[in-house]
Image (cartoon, rainbow, N blue to C red; front, side, top):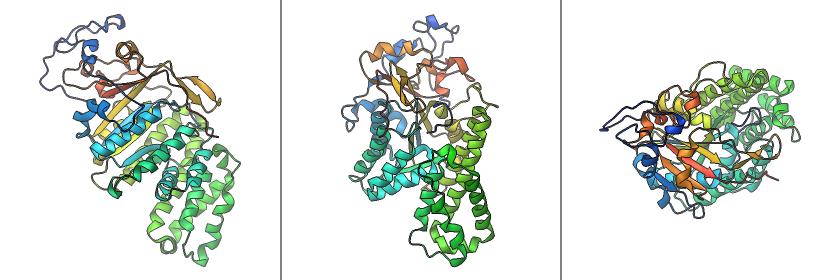
Length: 433
């Protein structure tokens, strides 16, 4: 979630398939060309398409296509275009299903770390002032929408019906680019603490640095940057004092300070170029997740809704990037020991749908920017959401690349994602007032 840039796999092996290679199909031939085991894409999809019933989010019978895969994975990612209304009931349904059937208890969020801290505080206390504050601070971004507020409320209500060990909580791994939210969260750690007199001058400044009427890219003033730099150095120089003051909260307090400094560096990178920002940001996700996952149970499982490029499990050709880089899905699936080989990715494709543009503060068309959408629409008819499974062993999508053919690096759609959700005729999300 960000205003700074345009809102924007496990390689599945073929087991026991009789493979008959043909010439690569042209776009006009896609619906008739045989690729694997005499199964065309259209023939294959006729057996692996399921309408999602969004009028009843508690009925999971329409998610049977996922059953075979949920026991094999610990990370489930959906790639979206931000601020489309139907994204939210879909993710609510999937999150609750995966919580019940796969033991997912962590919502892996494309949010600054401190947003996750405050959302968790709301989930713990039910204090809607906290939730209202975070969403209001997000106005001007894809997170400043009513659906984001309602989604967190839905988790709160759902958690009340679950035993403690099944309750969902947030883990957010983006940089803290919103200084107001960062300092507000640091203040939470000061409550009920016996702060030594030697640290009073340093820590009481935090409340004076929150600027309620300043939007977040402009919050990172030289005053705030200097303060964060001096606080970070002081925490190193007088570590014993800070550890004594914060006790068990010391490490998290220190992590937030570091993440806010990282946020100012990301703002600077974006001012130089979107490409540099994007490259650095994927590295931030890796660094933060690697740090945080080690503090979680070894059997932790995650679900998250991310901008679509983040969920690909293989690299694409560069699009404005200064270098070829892996994205979050590939990083989790190949580079993080705790999640290696355990990532399932679902790409969302839109037809005749709209999104809320925070920069224009108005609904805009959701780009129909992936190729071969014509393979999906015969099964969708008037359904608002359809789930397609691409990774069965007889699938032609293992060897041939559809949907991402213009920027592919590897052959095989399932090297990028294993499922698709087609959303049709969705309205835009509603800005939060």
